[in-house]
Image (cartoon, rainbow, N blue to C red; front, side, top):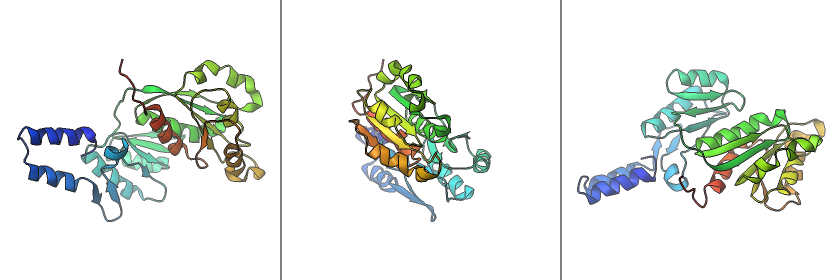
Length: 254
């Protein structure tokens, strides 16, 4: 039972007399999670939060990931995100289940399903080197049913590049600003737009960037209002939060 629609349908069947209350209770009791010994799959995540559980692939064996994804797929989960996996793991999984592997962000989307993009999220990067993190954010948001516009390599070293995309930024319901080095992009974007900005510091930079710490501290100390910050290289977290913001008030279907 993957989502609210499944539970609603079950309740309708009880109301119509097609399913007994006892059987419905059993289904609901069995649904919350499933114990695979090495993982306890949260099958009610989408009911509570609107999206299925996401699998953090780093540190898990390909066999463990396969077992988790297969079980989620059997339960009706779609667009299952598997983050931080190698090409080899992606190739292994593709032998057993449908999965779209994206090399740059090292991310897979299992049991992919087309979803109409709602609203508008803009993902902007300071440089091309920030793309792995930016693509993790963009693909996460797209998998959750959001329309995403990418604006890459518009860092403050050439401010005119960013300003040439001002009309794109102004139309966003949320902007994800991804940058390493000194992390100034988030503050500049935050001072231009009227929507929330999610700042993502990356580990891109030379020695004194301290693996993204300098960008993180710059973003945390931004003087631009409405700018929030996620962890270093956490593209997934930014994409997930942007999806929540983009869909908060509901999107009217055309």
